[in-house]
Image 1 (cartoon, rainbow, N blue to C red):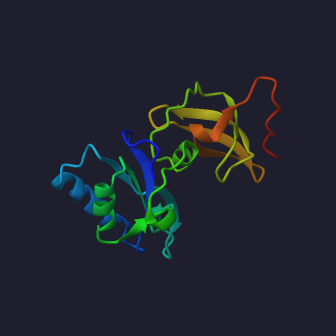
Image 2: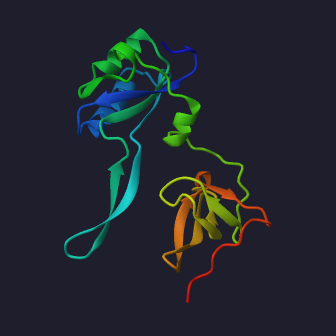
Length: 188
């Protein structure tokens, strides 16, 4: 069902709960053992890092799966590859009609951050920005520090009447023009 059989595309695999890492490891072994590096290009489990506070008051950084029970695979679709992938332990099938894969759209790939997205962003310290998506959507702020390698910036925003420094990805923010609305000041 793939539209282009010569270019690898991203597909979604459904797995048993808790089997995501095992499926990824099994697929990587399958690629290595059967020399499928040209057919299966990448396997990913999208995760995010969150901070959890334990009962003793200590904070710990925890990596959580964004979509439990799903593994993303970039491959060139063929019946042989479909058979090998769907017969991997822990895989229940591809997401698509009758278990046949449908390639993901470009906007879905960007939204899930499956590929490194290189933004033509010229952010620098002191720039005023608007945060356009994510948990801080709608906030305005000033960039305090940029990290071009990770495509992230530390942005000072006013939250609950206080200045807070938050880390925001380039893709989540837009540079405001010099004539943009003034950012609210910290309340006394």
